[in-house]
Image (tube, rainbow, N blue to C red; front, side, top):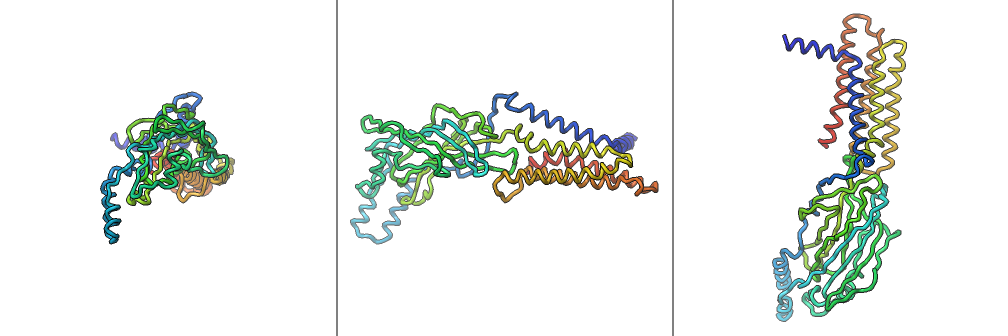
Length: 412
């Protein structure tokens, strides 16, 4: 009996025409309050967020960890070429890495002007390099140093270059003169320019981005031993345009606004190995700005669809029939407009999926308006079918607008 009463109650509840509108309205008010309450105006503190970086950044390792095996392999390759005995003996001399590492420090002092069309961000800061002329550069095979080694001994950062995305408005200049103390030298360079912004748009408009500064040197990786030192000052702003600066967990288990790593490309070849010192960090688009700019128009469109569904009189049937196509065209216009703000991508964003839900909602409400035409169901049996159809349409409308957006966000 209790089960039958429950079924009867649910059946009666589903026939309430205002139920769909009431649920949509309450859910919309909750969303608007939730995202507005988290606005920076009300909440000044940014909570740290962990993100997953690419495996090649997290799993990178020093070139020198397996240097003995690589040197032995290099000796075997040289010996197998049947060189003269004196050349073989010369190549088989002990090879050592640099005794004193070149200490590098990249300090990020400011971020500004995120360009979403070109996917770059303007960053400025300083780079410090400290090296020992006698012990920071190894002498491999030959006792004579090359031109790059001699230049590095004079000023290590002189031949280094950064991964600027464009030559416009970029600066990489020396600050002051070279400081000397015994055999140690120190140089400081100031940089400012546009750097690549790696954006993950799958969750757009709640997307994330990784900014990266990459310092490289023409010297072979076997000629010098690098070491990265973290700066003591972090003057990075809390937000840059629509993005918020997020703290991240670095590979060394520390939490900071940016992390560092030393990558070696072509690490299996001693002759061609090159070192890249990378500093990177995480940006996340402001949830409040994203919701109010992209999601809120769709929410109000769904509210209007649910509100117009309450019209049951025959003289107002035209309003019920024409509203879904109007909102459908509005959604198409809004989606086309936001696509013009993004770069060309080969996958659907979360906002595309939300717009698809909006399209389906318009089609469902249009079908519901057609079915609700009273003179099409004059017989009593047909009127019962009409009630069942409209009830199922409203339940489907509720599901795709209340449950499906959250499922799509967490699944994809």
